[in-house]
Image (tube, rainbow, N blue to C red):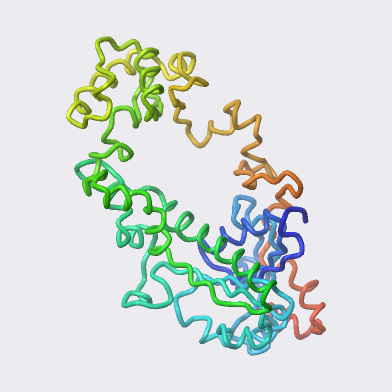
Length: 381
């Protein structure tokens, strides 16, 4: 392992989405991540662990042990692993870890310096804390979903704002902060990362704009939500799209110059009353050329221009290739670790391993016999 987190040990309780992504980021940054997976039996071959598909990118760089958490001995094995860990990550509903016998109090009794990271949608407390939900529900409650979309309706923004931005990234920030505090004080703590909180936090600038009177609480009527003609997307003659972000006056003037639109009052750029008509004019002009032709005219200039790339073509763009923004692991194209570090560069240690692939080697270090390992791993063979 390389990266700035080399030497950090993370125990991850297997789950879905944001917690696994947070653990993947920590693994990319050099942490040793041990995922506690549930036993999986193959229907066709009886009692045999499944192999993780190479496409399960969120499992890259991690180790995996299989434990039947209904077995008291499995809980004890997790507690033994926690004794030497820096971080525990879990993404269950509130109360699940307590019922498993792995509450923060129990874990901190074993390891007072442990950073106990909890990832939920609604948070550990509050009237909705035990209700089911998904990304869309959480960002609906924070005001984020209301602000994204057309004038007619909110638009689903993938599960980036809640799950991964307001969830996993907030959890990573909390965990890293907790590690620093634990190393200076000797005392760990619980990190309560909720997607409602995180997606609200991501909206800080917009809430500030609204408080100052510079943001309307109405979609597609503001500078950064698609209302302004100089900050938006345009269809080209080949049905491909480009993104324009010419906010500053000098960039807007360059946009007008390179687009060839005549008789534009540059001083009226920020006047919302002019936006609908100017958008129609820009829609017409961008529809006259292909995306490639607009790239020749505008890409690399201060227009603040970019072609809108499909997921399959993004890795082929020269800028992404130059920065190696994407990597290929076991034949699977995927985003590379980020951010960059000058001294301790992060790497993808390896692709996804099968569920339970590291069970024996890890549990043997705890002094468990082969028979004990077979029992608590859920595989009786």
